[in-house]
Length: 442
Ligand code: ADP
Ligand code: MN
Ligand code: MN
Ligand code: MN
Image (cartoon, rainbow, N blue to C red):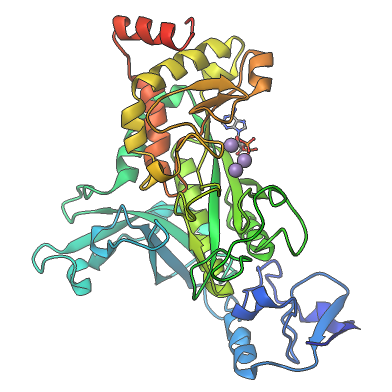
């Protein structure tokens, strides 16, 4: 569609009070670079030019955008809080999701802007209304745990990460955040200030055929090689989504640290961290929610399946980079080696907590180690645990656990890493055996 660039002199004066509101994206935005405009001009880009569409595809959508962008702050103190839960914390909403994750949310009006989750009310939820919980004792209570700025609604509106409890205040069995928060508040663990840097990989699928974005329907693209960190219409598919998500995360206050195109075409990665303790899980869950919402608007399906396409195509992981205070300090390499030793002795426990369908991904090929055996190495991407060259050289730093799948629960993975390396102790005998086997002299 044709478009013209026109200087916009008065445009700045029309900026609403909260001019840093991220502009909501329409379903059309993905497929077209065109910024739809109407007379009022809702383009919030700071460019001196505004883009004018010569032809509006659907004027109804334009008018909706006006309302979606309404700045309500001059008229009311009230804000909208989007309460978010993930499938593993809310049994009444549970189902097997196509993406491997299942996030649900609902909106609540709050009387004034808030800065801390403790200012927010808990929220009763009647599980029986979904037909998935028995009529008696069906209530689930959502506890607000972390808040982020809402990049979709802008203003003082917020996203709220919740976990779930019975009316008696017991965490429901699938509430993984509760257990993780317990581990992170253990004084031995908090004294070690555990840092996590999580590399979230994901695959974008064409909505109707559930086949990767950019792939010919019913056929395959050229073999892997040119796509990783690639640019160009034949190598990079879905950059607008990755980029929109990057900005949405920064706006929300998520500790996102980077993004890159992946080895398999249509697959992307972003990194969150380093984050301390329970924050890592809260930030990853919120970033996943943003990605679900952005792909929804783009008409593209998000998949966190660890191996979306069988054969000679990379799977999707969630490498978890981890360090403790002792590992980051002088001589930390010794603590890193001891942590690797402990991890080797609990390989099975970790694998069983590292995501559904991970056995399809951890084959020993495509930059993975076999699911059946534990291995570690410096700069080796075919190992369960990789230690960076820099860490070896400096004698301190962090380790990378390459085993977690893209659909892992970050509350489970981060807290298990802390538990295994800070709280858990093997027997001396097991330790000696493992040290010998792994050539780890600790
Ligand atoms: P890779 O080389 O495996 O692709 P990335 O650069 O994608 O690694 O991700 C590395 C992650 O590790 C980043 O999120 C980064 O913030 C995080 N990180 C860096 N230093 C530490 C540390 N000391 N402890 C934990 N995580 C760290
Ligand atoms: Mn990476
Ligand atoms: Mn990667
Ligand atoms: Mn990695």
